[in-house]
Length: 227
Image (cartoon, rainbow, N blue to C red; front, top):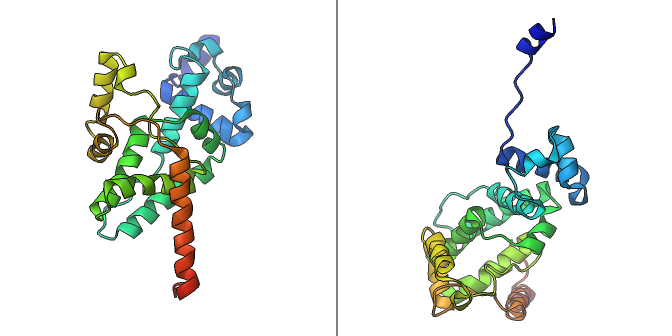
């Protein structure tokens, strides 16, 4: 009888990195980010916590993977000649994802991300701005303004360290990582002689965004709300 039951039992779903990350997102959505521990995640997946270490190296790797998946949920906006409609669509798509995972803003702010999904999002926004005729300097500032509106904080694109602080193999890997993102590569070249972005000045970006708001309010004061 036991042999017959074993033969008819459904096979267990294999444990994969994506399955671990998706379960982590589901746990945080349901119980909050504070509930996301390796032990509780193991209970959620009905596996020993040690089994997950074959797919995530630890809590930091888990959170980095979760952030990358969440940013990857942002639906790309179809290309259009109307740059404002494109940017609005991109911002609203990102907002939808942030509302779906309200705890994710905090994790993004604490950890940041420069994975493929985040780079693709940045590339889409920059490409839209550059295609509309904005200078790289203004497009760079606008990127910060838009992302602070969506994500609730001003996220630097990359860390402080530049090529002088990186071993040659790490510098080469960074350059290769940017190769598929022409707008970001152009920004990197414009922002530094070495072609790698450093941390942006938060005070400068805050002042730019504030001035943009005040200038917009001044136009509304003179002309009223659009009909």
